[in-house]
Image 1 (tube, rainbow, N blue to C red):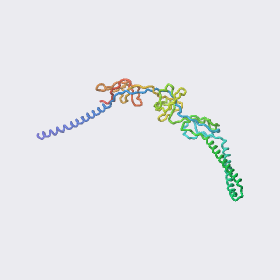
Image 2: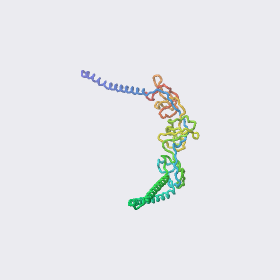
Image 3: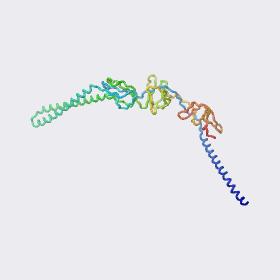
Image 4: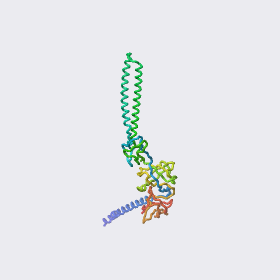
Length: 350
C-alpha cells in the first residue's frame, strides 16, 4: 500500500501534463486571434472628399499631323512608280522616276564636245611646248607664240564651261528621282506608270505617322482644352478602348468652325485620317467621396460599406455613382457615408 501511495503524485503529474499542453495551445490560439483582430482593426480609413473632374464625350475628327506632297520637277514621263495608297514609306525611299527624253541627247552631245575640247587642249599644249624650244633658238616669232597661248586659255575655258553644263544636266536628270520627304502614310497617288507630267504636278500625297494626331473639335469647346492637358480618346467605330493623349499645340485659327489641336497619343493610334473620334473633354469640377473597391461588398444586389458607429462597425447600405470602378480602382459614393466617417474592409472581424 505504501508503494501505491508513493506512485500517486507521479501519476497526478503525468495526468496534468496534457492539460498544460492544451492550455498552451489555447493560449497561442488566443494570441494569434488577438493579432489577427489587431491587424483587422488596422485595415480602416477615414473618408475624405476629393476633387473630381467631370468629362463629356465630344465628337472630333482625326486629321494628319503633317502632310506633304511629292511633285515633279521635270517635264517627262513617269517610267517607274513604287508606291500605292496606304503604304508606309521611310524618309528617302524612292517614290517615282520621271524621265525627260530630251536630256540624254544633250548629255551625249556635251560628252562628245568635252572629249573634242580635251583633245584640242592637249594638242595646243604640245605645240606651245615645241614652239617655246624653237623660240629659244631664234627660229619662232614671240607674237605667234603669245597668240597660241591665248588660244589655249580660250580652249580651257570652253572645256570648263562644257563640263559645268554637263553637271547641270546630270543634276537636272537626277531631279527625276522623286523621294519620300519623311516617314509617312501614302494617302493619295495621282498618277500611274506611263503618265506624262509637267513641272509642279503632284504625284503622291503623304501624312506623317509620328504618333501625333490632329483633332478638329467643335468651336463651343475651345475654352475647355489647354496646351499640356491630358485628354482621353475613344474610337467608337473600332472598340471602346480609351487612349490617353497630351495636347501639345493649339492652333490660333478656327477652321470651318472647329478648333484644331495636335495631340500626342501614348503608344500611337491606329485610325483612318478623317475618322470620327470621341474626345472626353473636361466640363467642370466637383467634390465627391471616393473609396477603394476593397471596402465595398455586395449582397443580394445591395452595396454595403462597414461604417464605424460608436464602438463597433456595422454594414451600411450605400449608393454608387457607377457599377464599375474608375481608373484608380475606386467607387464614387453618392449616399450612405459622409466625410469623416471611419470605414473598414468587409470580412475583417470574426
